[in-house]
Length: 198
Image 1: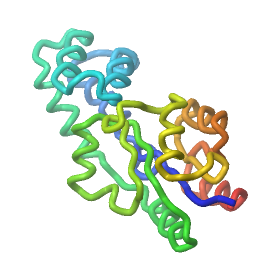
Image 2 (image 1 turned 30 degrees about the horizontal axis):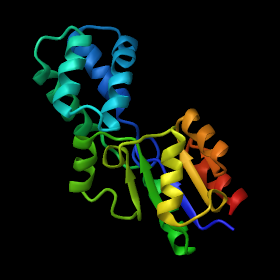
Image 3 (image 1 turned 90 degrees about the horizontal axis):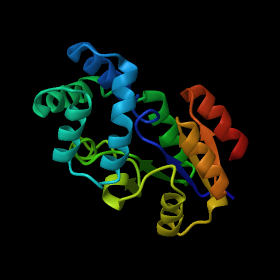
Image 4 (image 1 turned 30 degrees about the vertical axis):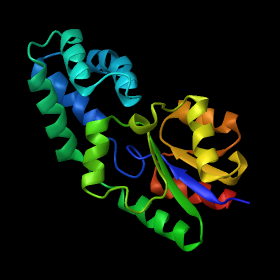
């Protein structure tokens, strides 16, 4: 018996902005986009778990990318983030339908504090309850402990939950934990996959 559907946020409910951020960084500072992604990833993992502050993140990333002045990097990321934030309208419709069916609909997102707080300021998490943000709970996907935390707080069993994410690693970890998990590709595909489980 499914009682809840837990959504990743960036890349599912909202379209993925990181690809734009990496592309703009690469373009502005004249470096390969793969280098930007590779150097950013370990620091992002720490930042999203709130193990390093925003100030440390920008300083360390500027150092890694050999950019003088962390502020220009920070401004570029924030500007690109805000300009490219687009909700996945069809997914929002699916969420409303799930709620109408009496299911709990939650968010589980790996996000850093400034971006999470921006989403909050725009009430982007408003249709979800509860909302689990990595920087607030000091853990992130795909670590098993975050899935344990979610079901415990929601007072559910893993098998009573469907988890939706656009990243393979996170979906595999959720399945291993005992959740039903769907790798998100499109709203149409999500709708079909949900119907199979519900």
